Length: 79
Length: 208
Ligand SMILES: [Zn+2]
Image 1 (cartoon, chains in turn green, yellow):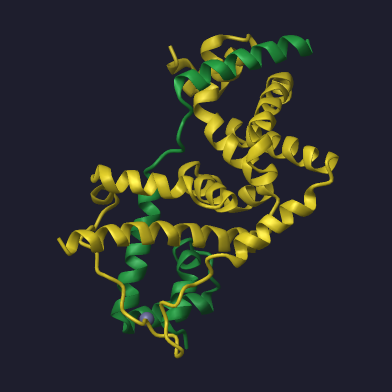
Image 2: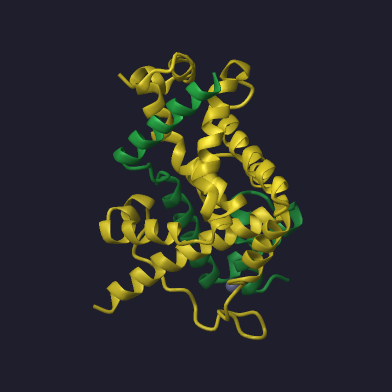
């Protein structure tokens, strides 16, 4: 039987559908009986989908300008 | 102008012709994640240099890009190879393994659970019920972004590649040169850290 601690440990794999059928059924069974873990897994899922709404920070315009200049110089050097 | 570049073929054409606007679009889109990947492999000090070298390789080998993966994935593989080659040259691959061990050892589960494996205190129920609700608070959004930048380098890369860049886990682990099981541990750690940030925010608001 999974304990709350095991649920915490398996939450990412559970949400990513990366658990064996046996483990998956055990997580389900625990969640059926345990309110705190249900809250935790639901909120962990929210965390995960919030992250999917974000984007990787892009460099600032002056950094981009500097990178373009360096890249062009290097490409020329290499030709 | 940059509409032309949202299509990969348009971007590749622009890059091959050496168009400034294509360079700008590509650097804006990929430089951030390239730096994260390079930092995870070679560390902060020479990551920028690696990314620069990788860009040069990208431009030089564009004609060899066959479109079997996305352009982004292909570029990130080049970053990874450039970084790994550099490590080998400097025989620093040991340092890389140490960084992984350190990240795996750090921040393992805190004592949220008692000896019998039950919650010491049950998790707070959030009032948020959608990602939109979470991200509608500028303060919380900023706290989350901050926390991501402050993650250990490998965790930051795994999280960003998976959630923001939408790469498959096996591809991510190849790029970062880690096993898939380690990758999954790091991903869970990173998500747990962000959970904590949202949880702290929720707790601080509910006490006001
Ligand atoms: Zn439980």
